[in-house]
Amino acid sequence: MAVPTGVREDATSSRTPPTTGAASGGRRRAAPALRGSRRGGHPFLPWLFLAPALAFFAVFRFWPTAWGIYLSFFHVRPYLGNQWVGFGNFTRAFSDADLHSAVWHSLIDAIGSVVGSVFLGFCLALLLEGPARHLRILRTAAFLPVVVAMVAVAELWNSLLFPGQYGAVNSILGDIGLGPLPFLSSPHSSLATVIGVQIWKAAPYDMLIFVAGLAGIDEHLYEAAAIDGARAFQRLHYVTLPSLKPITTIVLTLGVIRGLRVFTEIYVLTNGGPAGSSQTIVPYDYLQATTNNDIGYASAISVLLLLATILLTLLVRWWRAKVED
Image (tube, rainbow, N blue to C red; front, top):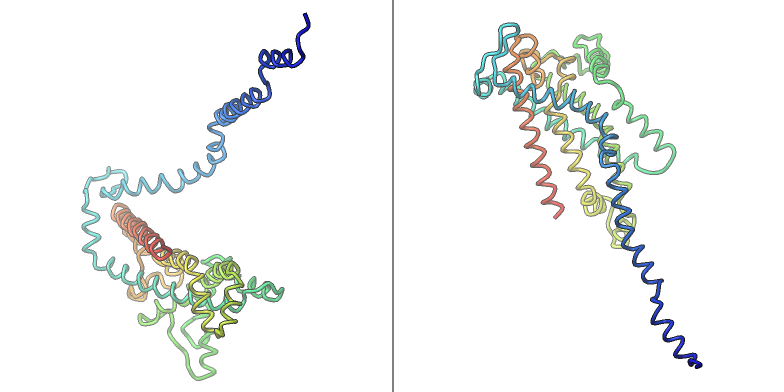
């Protein structure tokens, strides 16, 4: 008996389910499992790449920090055994007049060096920002103080600022009737001189960050301001400075932390003198640990400085988030 063609096709289609959708559905279901198996096959691979850096920080950062926090609760006596004093070292730090003077000098140094370096770095960035070849050469020349070791910079300025009339700077000042000046040898000018050296060293670094920020500002903003008749100072005030707020926050944070932790400049140029007029926190801490051999008290000062740095960083992040919102 002959079966009609339409009936035969319907029966065939009903017996044979479509394979395209099933196959594609199977592939779609299998793909996540395959990706999961690939991810699950090497769970420690990222940590393997991070292991050298983590080991370095563990040995030279985390362990010394933890050990310093531990020692801050003891009166350290080498070969005799450490004596537990609890918070005695911290109580002593809050009542130490010399430490208070060092903290005050550190604040003055941080504010002066940060304000000076940020202002000078911003001015240099405005002058040297651009794609021209001669500007790139000038930026490279201006950046050279940053790559020079701080010890070499301090020794160089120590020679240039020799207090006698035969010092290089005093010789020039004497020729124009202004010298010689004491600079580093006077309690009234030693800290200001150190701040000047810090500004000379740090301003090119801030300049480089500001140059990167200026390059990221949309040129259409300047064009719109020019069409509205804004002058150069108005474009700077209403376009450049608001656009550089995040960059300025980063520069200020790095500068303040750098100012609170200043050591090499003070140690090489003045060693805290004369008469303690340029003594800051870190050189004073170093003096307690080496000259006075009071490692427990020095550790307590370091812990307080660490807490102050963390608190300052959190405050700056909070202020940045509030400004950006």
